[in-house]
Amino acid sequence: MTASTTPRPIATLLDAPGVALIGRLLLTSPFWISGVLKLFDFPSAVGEAVHFGLQPAALVAVAVILLQIGGSLAVILKRRTWLGAGALGVFTALADLIGHAFWTLPDPMARFHDMNAFTANLGLIGGLILAAVLAERRRA
Image (cartoon, rainbow, N blue to C red):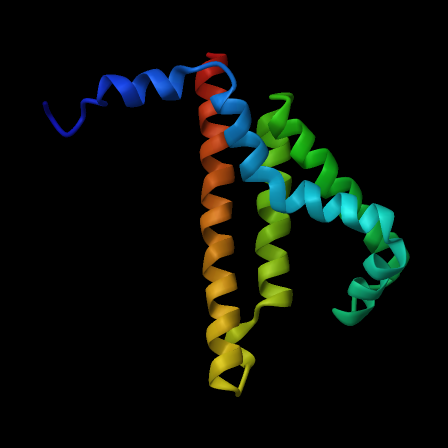
């Protein structure tokens, strides 16, 4: 067996019906869960925008909810995956810069926690890029 050969049980699992859908649901779960929670607690969504100095806060909250839920649905349903994944990726990068600017924090523990969140989000962006790449390859 070479390093490039996937063992049959793993290949069978990866090809099983529903596995890709589960992957897309899990990949987008931080976004659609957040969007649904914001939708049902809109005052907190507005408060979050205010906290980060984003104005007009209510409009920002609506835009974030639409982006999080709409982008997630695009990836989950494989409808313009490139657009949904791209929008979520750009959103995540901006949110990282605004919400996890670890390099500005004087407290070492807070800096460490924000750095971990920042780098975890980089991994999430990578997953979104791969989702778009795979969707495009399967379309061709």
